Image 1 (tube, rainbow, N blue to C red):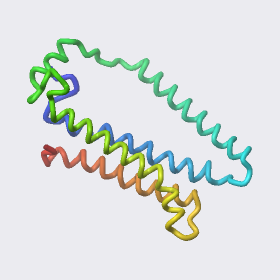
Image 2: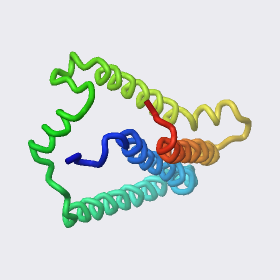
Image 3: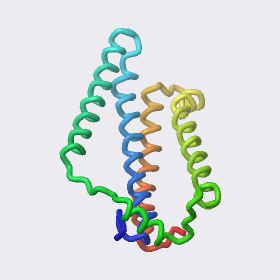
Length: 166
């Protein structure tokens, strides 16, 4: 029995799960634009606003961990893993001989690296290239760009139901 569902929907599941990553990239610039970048004149007050953000993140993470602690999560057995390995086309025991997986790992590494590099420098780029752009405005522009990215991810997961991603 498949662990996560039918293999034909594997790409949809992973794309849909990764779309939720984009939700964090939307929330972070919003917090930055309205909380961190609004109080630039006094460093003590700026630090106080940042500490409340970190406290909120910690409370959210602990409550999320508690939800996982009390949730019944199915145990994946060795038999389930062997079934998946036996019924996965192109499965190779040795990672180094499975060239598609190896190349996919390299592609994912490059993708994540470029995504982080672009989003890390976006606010500075907006400030440098657009006249009268503050850090808060740059963060709002980043929020818009990341929102488009998230919509694209969710739309991609939806269209994968009708268009084969392979």
